[in-house]
Image (tube, rainbow, N blue to C red):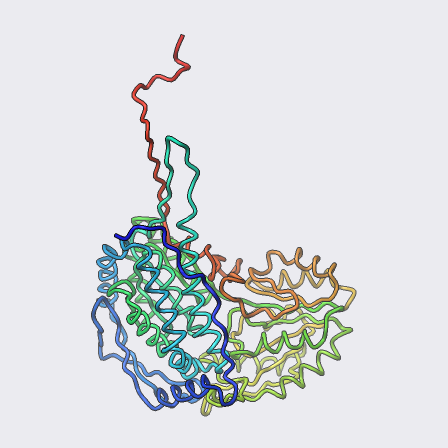
Length: 542
């Protein structure tokens, strides 16, 4: 084994490309988009060194053109999930003992592959199968993923460097062991970066993984798999299975070597997983790590001193980028009466200016929601708002799924601060606003804090420092990421560690050292140089 205290390249955030007219990156991503659009791919399960095709397949389609098939993926059966677990545990024998710098090199290479030869491809895949605009795809599938991979390596070295105090005759050391067993990664459709990071962060720390991507994200997951393979992730370290989430989860959670779950998704599903782990606790060889980032009902709160244009931009970007399909998306707003006329006017003008359609057209700000289930749910809430006396739709409210799952960006104004769309996570381009009396600022702070079960992100807009201080204190438990004079989305790896509490998750902060610490089991080693040879202590003398 090489000898030396190795230093990894300093982590830097990947610059976001502009994709301006006539730029080389625009030409590259459009070429990749057209090529991938006109192909159909076949995605197997990846178990150990095998690509397993079961013949039981599902189509992959584009949300903005749901009749267009871009490929199919094969559904695993229980026997394949069991095989994935066995492959992971076999791979662990070598992977857990591999020198850390070798693991680091693999994921640093993966970052550079995405920054270079895979950039257009992974962005195009995210545009096609998740209906992200090029800008949303760029900051997610390219930049955030690259940042995760680079910073995780740096965070790993910081963890390993954190050592206890020693004295001249005693050397104390802490070894950061991988978990004993395997990790289960469950990833969502909405962020390609999250889909890659959840298995990769655990694997980087020496763990082996069974990864179940979202059925709606398999197209870009295939690119992630290709990158990991080219970067040198050994067979069996990250096994990938598709199919029935209940069957896969039940099979995994019943295994004695289950050591942890890394999850991003709905609150309900996460609670059900936690319950199953509790019911199976006597089965496991170790206490599993349970790490989850779940839902949000994220707020924008404007103080009477706020700048109107800043508030409106925070709402429009926060609520409608990627059709509001972010756990951090703004979905409830609190605007003072004194500002409401100006905010309303600017908000209507901005939303009316937004174009909607295919992400292939770079002039579109809004594209489609992910699938028919999401579309139907959103349409039902919009229809109900049209009927309710305490709600008014001031902009949007239309929808159409004849070609793609298109929901207009919609703003609901309610006289009821506990109206359904003020409390319920919709996960779509629907923003609900409550107009409060200026004099009731303190009451509104309490309202913001107590309205939702979630506590993921939130934003306050104010030019009054006392008001900012009041809100920061009053809402300290209301969000895990709190934004002052900015939209409540867009956390950057290494800058704003991301996660929330209450029903929003375990707040284990993706994009920070805190998350990686969950995937190790420290061992303290004490070595004594001069070992006592007589049991008698001085106090025993006469």
